Amino acid sequence: MRIVLVGPPGAGKGTQAVRLAEKLSIPHISTGDLFRANISGQTELGKLAKSYMDAGELVPDEVTIAMAKDRMEQPDAEGGFLLDGFPRNVSQAEALDELLTGESITLDAVLDLEVSEDEVVKRIAGRRICRNDSSHVFHVTYSKPKREGVCDVCGGELYQRDDDHEDTVRKRLEVYHSQTEPIIDYYKAQGLVVTIPALGPVDEITRRALEALKREDATQ
Ligand code: AP5
Picture 1 (cartoon, helix red, strand yellow):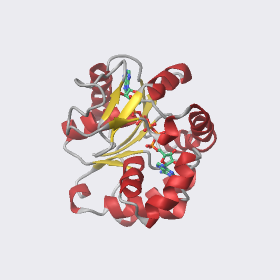
Picture 2: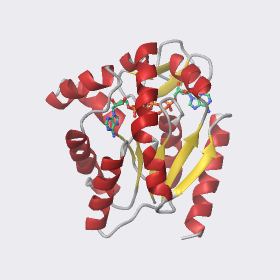
Picture 3: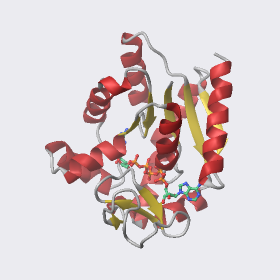
Picture 4: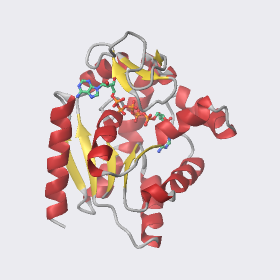
């Protein structure tokens, strides 16, 4: 399957993407994680991305699209992928369409995680991620690591993301409403959007997502 995951910052996209990708045996491609890996590796791309991410702004389309394209062209993504955080505006969605059309492939679904702004603020405020791999995600209340400050998966140090501070979160939410939400209408016009409520236990949301994707698959 080829799936795009969409939802506001802190909706639980990364949390669900890891589980869904495993269940569906497809790679999880997160542009946020790719940028953070570049920042850790102190690459030129990482230095550029950091200035935008710390301000809560989108990294320019040109570099983002090139990075996503390069990742989607890796052999493990040949049979499908789960995109998390890409596309993030209409021009990235158009670029993705162009890329897929060139390969004669199509998206199967756009999974929209619906959650209130109050809840995302709580989720982001308590989020802690691993220094070794930013897809290892915890929460100080909702998803506590076994040992405080230590990643259950790899033993890495847990920390709060630089862009998870209050002012930046406010900016990221503004950017989500003005630039990312319009892609939901873009994909609705293609009949691809499945919206699920994303409030409740993590496993329950994974179950809802898998059921919704199964229904979507059956209608195609
Ligand atoms: P990115 O890393 O993609 O951030 P985001 O979209 O803002 O999403 P988050 O990672 O904040 O949240 P999430 O929905 O994954 O939630 P999570 O699962 O962690 O992007 C960061 C930045 O990179 C952007 O601002 C931009 O600058 C740049 N960027 C990335 N892609 C780009 C693109 N395409 N174009 C341009 N720029 C781009 O969960 C949040 C917390 O809640 C966790 O602590 C988790 O444990 C907890 N939680 C999850 N589910 C539940 C639940 N059901 N109940 C209770 N708690 C839960």
